[in-house]
Image (tube, rainbow, N blue to C red):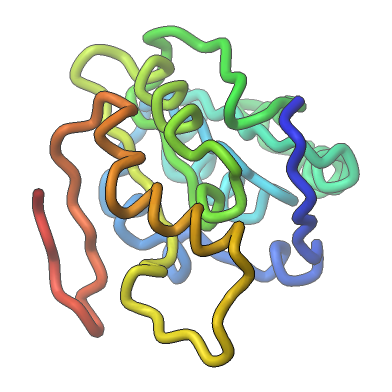
Length: 183
């Protein structure tokens, strides 16, 4: 497992909802799709994904926090098309299995986000879709200045990390404030 130190509050994770908190993904989901959710936490959004793809679909949520996974398994046990697995976003072993691979508010906490994106790309079927929801730290102002390791991460991710992962085109969707950008 990678050496990640961040741990999200399960009470906050448990309040998230697919339609409200990951609406771009919600608009892409159809019955029968297979979806991999990286950094699924307590499974609140992941369970919404499972409901959207229906019993003929398949959803796997991956998280590195066993405590969050325990809560997810207990809370969402009734969804038979949903499974939660322990794993690290930078060490994914799936190959060409999923119609959609997603991560919400996850990459910002990973020391090597390019490894996570490459693993997500490999997990997607040919023609599959990667959907990443994260904060645009490049547009934030900092007062006081952030710690050096955060500055290094932001610089790497926003200037070059995406290129090293093999992703050559992406969309940033934030219609409320910044509009949509394609590169």
